[in-house]
Image 1 (tube, helix red, strand yellow):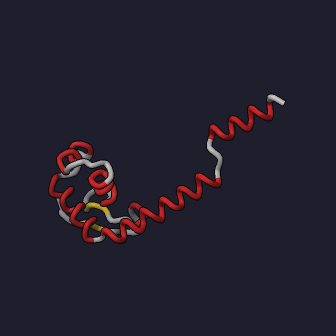
Image 2 (cartoon, helix red, strand yellow):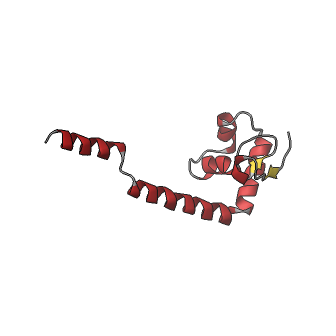
Image 3 (cartoon, one colour):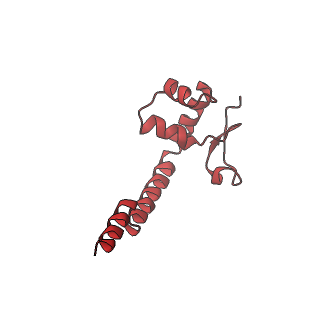
Length: 102
């Protein structure tokens, strides 16, 4: 299995992926950083990856951590904005129930 990270605009929106797979570096990094999974646990969750590929992805992530963190913050701001602008299903159901009960 190749030990390389590639970024192809035609695949996964140009996000860095592990060569020979469609797994994004961020898919591995999130499991490691946010979910607290170790490389062995990541390998169990993503069995198509070797430990070497997982370590390669983590090395790439740490080499480019600033960029990944900026992209993550941008995505979080967009998600929060969308949540504020769009009522949840529960809120819409309550509003509909209130109108029907009049």
